[in-house]
Image (cartoon, rainbow, N blue to C red; front, side, top):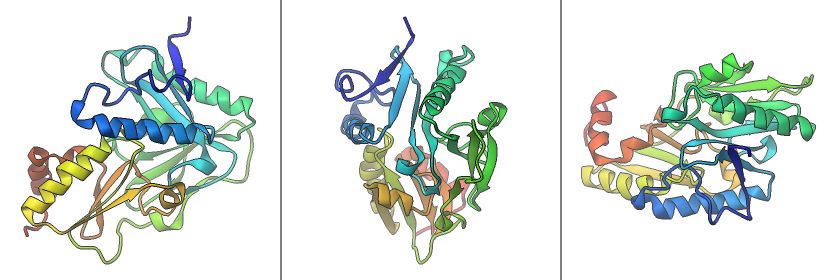
Length: 260
């Protein structure tokens, strides 16, 4: 029997989706991620995980339906991809990637793409690992993101980042600006509860932009649509943990941001 299971419309209500399944604070956010998945299953989305109570999974779907500011056609886009803790070093990562490659071949896709950081970014896959698996860099942004591609058949139509992502700042912004979506079961609680309270307490101006549609995601200024934080218009981090009061102070000092 395969050690993996595909999560779909038929079993998602009784099966876990890896992240936040034991975090009571994020229970509502967890259900919002499940709701997002249900809608994306209708667009050919796949959620494939180890049949254990573990964080070992891959999510992917057609590039045309990717909640990312990228352009391309006939590729499969890999979203979240995670093998954690004791499960590392057992070949699970390669097995999950092979599942995506097999599906791409079966459906006549040109290949796979994924967004990573030039350095390791929180809540994003490890770029170096993908490069060792035969992916190549096909586009970059000034804010430190790369678009990787692995072709399985020849094409001259190379996927790219949309134009608005090319710079590392957003215009006419004060204080903290955040973009996030329900692609992650942690985001809604940490942004809407913890970060809002932290910023209000400190008197820091802020703007929170929740991405709720595919079109909004395609027009986002950041390739990290799970969570991206800007300060005075400059991109700072994808690290969702800065929403917590105890981590926010360390973050504030690390980046030597101004006081309000």
